Length: 313
Ligand code: CUA
Image 1 (cartoon, rainbow, N blue to C red):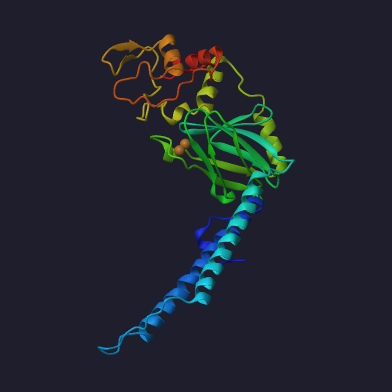
Image 2 (spheres, protein in one colour):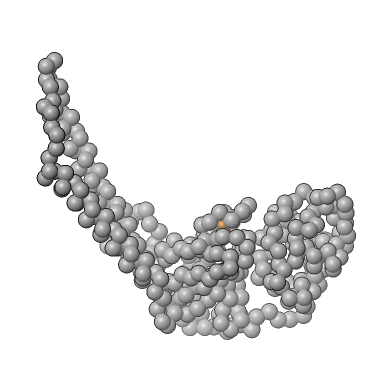
């Protein structure tokens, strides 16, 4: 059923998590509107009624009015207590994940969301979920503070380095919803977008099976999948177009001028060092903004990425 302030909210696609938030949102807005109208009418009425009518029209001295003072203290107190109780129960609901929730791991890092599923499937900036089933997203950050926000489900939580946090929801319709990062996390914070893709349960199972097993193929193919899953292309183009970082096009054996004036030729060791410790040798004209991958990629994975980069001409 439509309510007065519905236009301020996106569609509610996860009633189990959104209803409480929406109800409180409407309550606060409607109470505020009632007070706004009431106070405005009283203001105008009194301004007219007590308008000064002659030179010696004096206001009598009024010290206090107990009834009035108690009324205007107790009514707001009750309203505030209702808001508190409502908000608290909504918060408890968002913290209490249903027992049968399906768990997905999420990692936020500058400036992507990476999702990992039970069978080894991985996605970048796409969260695939089945409809009609509670989903728990367990989140961590690889670098700085991010925040995971799905407006359609009314769930939002900080994603903190060195700590796990979570949100849960249950999507009741198939389709897509936007995921925002809502904590300023650097240059491309506003591009740190992802989407939830809600499937029918049987389609989700098919999708999962198709994408399970993780990264496979020849070293070059594995390297390509790693580059795509790690979100490298957010900052490095493969077609030469300008982005936050140097392009991968023609990177192999390219002579590169560094910020300190020296030059390097891009070889295995330079790529390896630039992945693990990006701040060591920054290419001239670029900022040192990349998160170090030290401890995040194995030697084999780095080798595969190098093999792939060699092929981008
Ligand atoms: Cu991540 Cu803002």
